Image 1: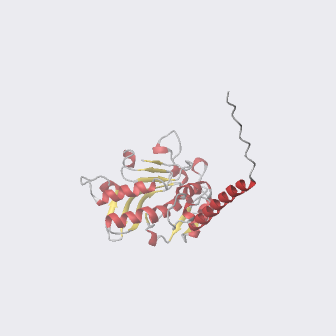
Image 2 (image 1 turned 90 degrees about the vertical axis):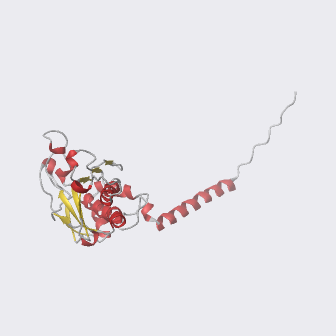
Image 3 (image 1 turned 135 degrees about the horizontal axis):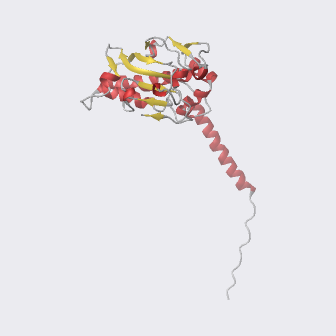
Length: 250
């Protein structure tokens, strides 16, 4: 019977552990430096509404939904002028967080009608959406930038779909806005009613409206379009409902 010899145990090597730790530290240092150079990908870095889009952008936009101070700081860093309004309303229609953006001509954030007293997260999302999604799509598909937006309102003290029972709409706290059309700098006017559907599959107006809808899906908590139901046939409903870091988009 052949007896196998047991190999002696390998001695504990502190130098190997040290080398591994140094390697990990080097990787961490490299990652820290990379994130510092690319803050759009770093979830710990403040949101830059005018900066490039990154891996962490959707997470940062979602985080604004529950932090009014953080949201206002994001607007200030982007140079967005706004007026904070006093709380108003009662019960389920109490609006603790509402503000009005001013001087939005360069961003295409001129609203018709001009009254816009939405929550800060809605306004911040509108800034991002216009800057990074709507304007690039308008230039690419229509050859002109958006000059202003037509809206159907932000605040309405009502339940979802105007029902007599059930949950309250995000409009009840001005945490939503309905966009019905876009006016371009070249004078053209696009509306959801007239331009959403088209017999021409390559129709640029319909393509732009869908690009605007799709581009809102990871910016807002809820995006509802004419494809959702007949109640939204003439507008895009955009709100910042608390959905964690996800969204509902139809």
